[in-house]
Image (cartoon, rainbow, N blue to C red; front, side, top):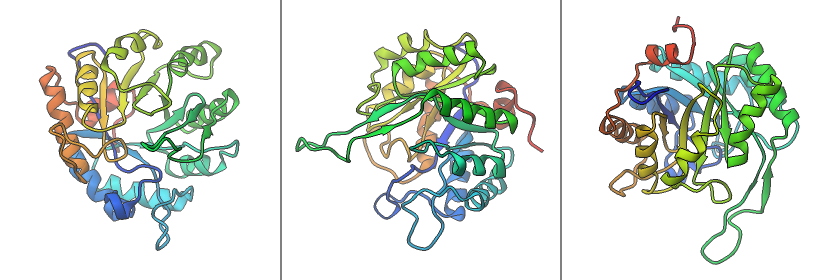
Length: 292
C-alpha cells in the first residue's frame, strides 16, 4: 500500500499465555466481544484472535477446540458487524490438527501463517532464562500445510515474520507457489531473540517484501513501540496493537483496555497523514468479499 492510502488497524485482543488474573486480558466470548467492540469503535477493522480454554480456571491456557473458537468468533462478529477475523494458528510441533480444525470450523477471513522458525528466548535481569529455551518450529513443510488449508477455505494468510531471513523467505514461498497474491506480511519486532523494535530497521526490511505485498509491524514491548508505529505509518504500512503486544500507552502509562490502545494507534496514523480504513474499505484493500 502506497503512502497516503488509508491504513487498516488491527487489534490483537489477547496473547497466547498472558495471565488474565494479572493483566486483565479477555478470555471468555463475552469479554472478547466487549474488548473487540471498544477497539472496533476506535477504528480497528481486524481482530487478531487467540482462543483460550473456556473451562473454569483454565483461561490462562490456549484452546484448539473448534467449538471454543466458534463461540469466541461468533460473539465478536455479533458485536462488530463487518469485522475481519484473523485467527491465530501458532503451535509448537508438527501436529497442526488443532489449528486446522479451528480454521475449518470458523472460516476466518485471515489467519496467521508463521513463516519460519525461531529460537524463542528471553533473559531476565538476573541473567537467567525467562523460560526454558525453546524452538518455535515452522519448517517449510509445516508452512506449506497451513497455506494449503487456508487457501482451500478462502482464508488470506498473514505471514508472520520474526526475523529478517523469515521476511526474505516470503518471496521464496511465492516463487515456488506456496503463496500466491495477494500477499500480506507482518514484521514482528521486539521479541528479544528476533528483530529489535528499532524504527531504523524498518526501511531495509520492507525492501525485502514481495512486490505489491501489504504489510504491518507487530511491535512488542513497552513505550518504545510507539516510535516504531509512527515509522510504519509514515512508510505506508498498516498498523496493529493490542494487549497481546503491549500494555503501554504513548505517555508511558499502562492500560488494560484494547480500545485505548487502538485510539492511540489511530492518532499515530492521523499524525502521519493517513485516514483510517473502514471494515468495508479494508476488505476491498485485501481483496476480500463484502461482509454478508
